[in-house]
Image (cartoon, rainbow over all chains, first blue to last red; front, side):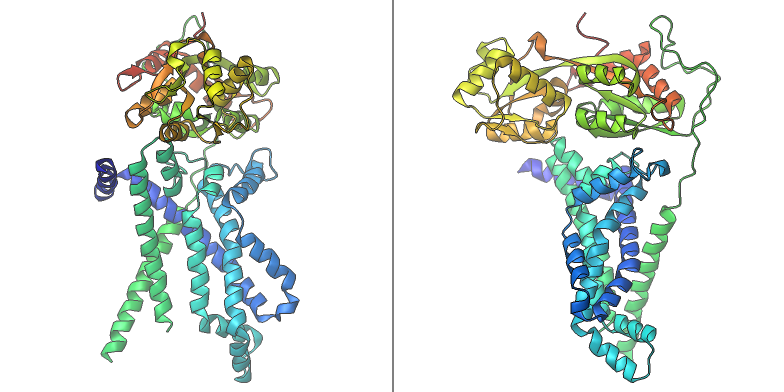
Length: 230
Length: 313
């Protein structure tokens, strides 16, 4: 019990002292996951809206594909990206393996289906109603779609939050394509794995608490936006 | 009116936070200046047993190199803290940053063969020599060694402490079916363990008492500790974790438990993009008198974890 307490104390001391190594890890985690979710949002929300406004029977096959990819194991996503980015892979010349960019690509691969799929589900529930009203008021299809997105932003934010939670918590993909290189590609989750491997369970737990606090802050921001929409 | 204001205030805060996050995210991702590996055409760093300068005495003319190399290595060199000790000294001498990817030896050899690293530090001598033969790696040297040990619960229910050879120990454990936790991850340690089972004439895979977990040495020791089981481990990882474990050394000193580490560069003829010259500088650093002394001086809990050079005469 006292060891557990020591671990918490150690982790919080690192936070309070703004330990540079820890801060670097924290910032990289946020940077990678936030950029990944921004890219997924820019790609996934328009696609999800488009699909959600189409009649269900026309998109049945695409739906199934998207839903399947929502459950993609991170390790598999990591391996796929690894094989593409490896020097022997088709994109090897770019030299992206073991860089933060590779980690962002892997996390986009994981979160894009989630953002797309949940946006689509949200839009499908109510979107055509909103679209009809918008059109009856004289909106063209682009404006009508924009109105749908605006009116259903709560559902869409839900999709984005879910996507973010998925990538900020995953470890399998970033471990493989990032390599957990100290000071370069080490993020919160891979640091937790490393400390667990080294038997520093308490420090690992402490890092886990930091990660949860970060998620809390990011989610609070998104939640505020969502409330603003009510 | 007031209500509206407070709502707007909240929105402003949210907006500021959002913009902040965006700026920080995007700003932080400015591409790093691409540094071309400028291979130095002058004397290729030569590795000689004869006259290698002392590491620690940087030659005067050497400008710090603003670049990095990628080292693929095994979990034991990294988790034991050895590389955290050695690499900053190398970086100080050369300016080269060392980016460490630590995996099982099998994965590290694969990473190297694919050209995804510049230099390797691993421990599976037979596979290393074969891959050098096949042309995947060059400039391989026996850089340091330690040994494997068998650890077990304090009361040693199988009585391994009474025997001196691994073959006997494995037979004792297998006969009564005492729990043994194995890496099972195709690492150097796991490959060694499998060779030893083979020489004991036992095939443990699939046995009820044999837990093959597919994880690193640290996790394996933790599990053996929890299950009150046995495990074969490199001495380094055990010593560095000893304080957190109730496991004791039940067998050591059998010559078959010798554990040789090798350092080598990825063959630049196979993978023209690798930073061969820099990789060679790292190899030279470890093999120099100074580097070998540094390895010998590294201790955890008052014990030396790695011994320089080649261990068997």
